[in-house]
Image (cartoon, rainbow, N blue to C red; front, side, top):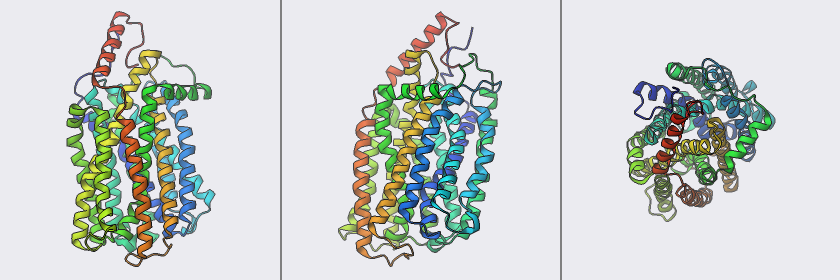
Amino acid sequence: MRRMSANAGPLPLRLKLAHGFGAVAFGVKDNGFSFFLLLYYNQVLGMDAGMVSIALLIALLVDGVIDPIIGNLTDRTYTRWGRRLPWLYAAPIPLAFAWIALWSPPGGEQPTFLGLLAIAITVRILLSACEVPSVSLVPELTSDYDERTTLFRYRYLSGWSGGLLMMILAYSVFMPGAEGLLKADGYVTFGIFGAVLMVVSVIGSAIGQHSYVAKLPEHKPEPFSMKSAFSEIREAFSERAFLIFAVGGLAAYVSQGMTFSMTNYLNVFVWQLDQAALSAYPWMLFVSVVLMFFIVSPMHRRFGKPKSAAIGAIGSVALFMVPYTLLLVGMWPQPGSLESTTIYFGFHLVANTLGIVVMISASSMIAEIVEKHYESTGRRSEGAFYSGNWLVQKCATGLGIFISGQIISASQLARDSAPGSVPQDVIQTMIVLYAIAAVILAIVSAYWLGRFPIGREEHEQRVAAINAAARADPDAHNLVP
């Protein structure tokens, strides 16, 4: 008799570690695009912040359109190594070369708008060819409600660790101190090191999971076609649960993209963090990721994924906005002082922990939608749903970066600004616009993610029904192909 379901019990620790390790590449990319790219092309290479943000937004939108094609191709890949592994072995090498080119424009000079757009699109498409098949393995590896959360815990721990490692090295080795962020030399080494780390993480993760997933799929899929690729993504968005997730996730991802791309501007020009504080900042974020690792599963067990996401969204923005509010009303210590930095880090630590809880909760919800779709159609479409998620995330992140660029432009921050010399009205405009956007996005995210309709009980009943049907008819499609 065929295997009726994915593993329903605890997965081996080595498999969790191997699966999560692949997300390091995404962390490297996300850190670079979100924290450093806008600052690099604007303040270092001299491109207009608004134009840079438009280029990155267009790149994300193009990538989002390509993602359904990649997802559909991975669903239809039919090899003795399964559906996902060939992608994980093939994509990281060209991704590494494209990543290096992004941080090493010809002659070290300002590229054209189209030049930046072309290399940004290339990087994002190749990263998708690594990340979409990797994350699509989650429903295949386990059908357990909590183990799926655990896999995403390891993915987020690894992704954040990779991104924070790049940030630590950026602040302390590649371009140390606030002034170092405004010089071009360190960004070249930053790009090369990140490229190597991407290759090691994706291929290493594939090797670590090879023995678990490298097998010929039991059912040969239909041939790929553009029509089927976008037909399946339309089906994904026709699922009520996915639509609710998409609206809430859209707001959460816009907020994340905006916050990440604003971080260096806020840290350098608003909070005036010195070299020691900038070097400590990634470690503070790492502690928040570790805290998330221990609290997200208990939150899911007690509140469920939808309510955990809502609590995280409101709690995160409330705590994150306290320092900015106190600064605006004159009740905050002098920015740049040890007292200011310490208190700011304290609020940011807890706020970021809750913010990651939102992202893990949302990502884990998609796996439950896969079974709901399978129940109604008889097809496994992990790639379609996760590429749909990437479509939402990338459009949203691009919009978040675009909003950041417009906030910087509206605040009239000079391109050659130095920490401590920015006029107070510029600082106030930057903070107020950022705060308004962040609060609105948090409320929208909490409302819609909190309404996600699939809970633990419904999911477990659905998996049991699918497995019972498979046992009754061994020739029918299985929960896992």
